[in-house]
Every structure is written in C-alpha cells, then in structure tokens.
Image (cartoon, rainbow, N blue to C red; front, side):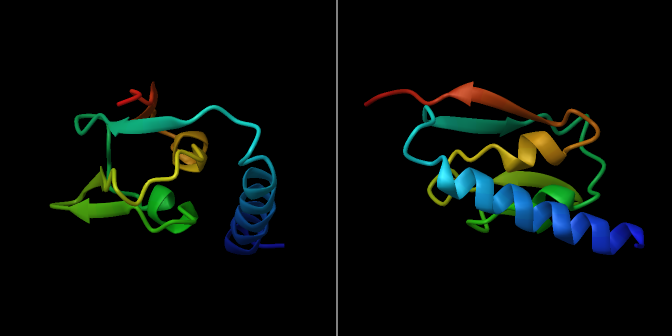
Length: 89
C-alpha cells in the first residue's frame, strides 16, 4: 500500500469516527499558528466541512464552516493548528 492510499484510508476512517461521535463531543474551534504552517495542505484534504482555506501558502480556518471535529489538529505534523474552547454566546 502506498503512502497516498494509506492517507486516504485513514481520512475515511477518521471522518466516519468523528461524525459518529459528533453528538457526544464538546464543541471546539481551532486557530492556526501561521509561523508554524508550511502549507502542506493535509488539513485541507482531511476537513469534512471544507473549512480550511490556503491563503498565501498558509492555512486559514473559516469559522462559519468549521464544525469543531478537530481532524485538522490531529493530522497537522507541524503543530500549526491548535484546539480552542468554543465561546458560548
């Protein structure tokens, strides 16, 4: 199995797990640390809600689209995306 096939299989597995756990988990938001982001786009490929945008070679999160699944945090090898508590309005 090549690396891309493995990555796609892992994405499918994690996406299904996080969708199944959606009602049980606490709501989070994420923030990007641009000085750590290298623009590898792994976070964009794994995001089920298409909330990650690449702007000038760095990741950015569309807070309106983000569901708080934290898949982007788990896949980022550079620690450029951090989990934050979602503020209740």
